Length: 102
Image 1 (cartoon, helix red, strand yellow):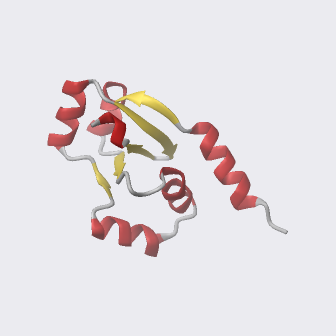
Image 2 (cartoon, rainbow, N blue to C red):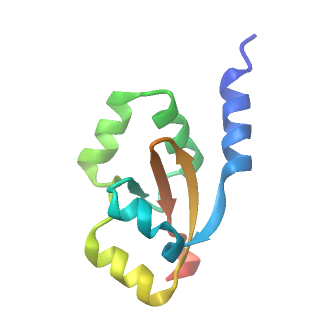
């Protein structure tokens, strides 16, 4: 039995943390931050990115459920000093704002 997906999810879960948007400015400026819609599971998205599951990821990109952070959103998060959930799948940083942050 292959335990790899379970161990990947466990590892990603341990590497996921809340971080202030202000601490991600360097990554944002480099175009390395992807925003994940709050209706998706951040860990599932990270797992699919790590697995290079292009068809699924392309579907999310096309639907707008995953995408680069827009300047207007970045400014709003900066002004509000927003905490986001984040996980790194090099070279990308996936971020997600939860409903409680609204």
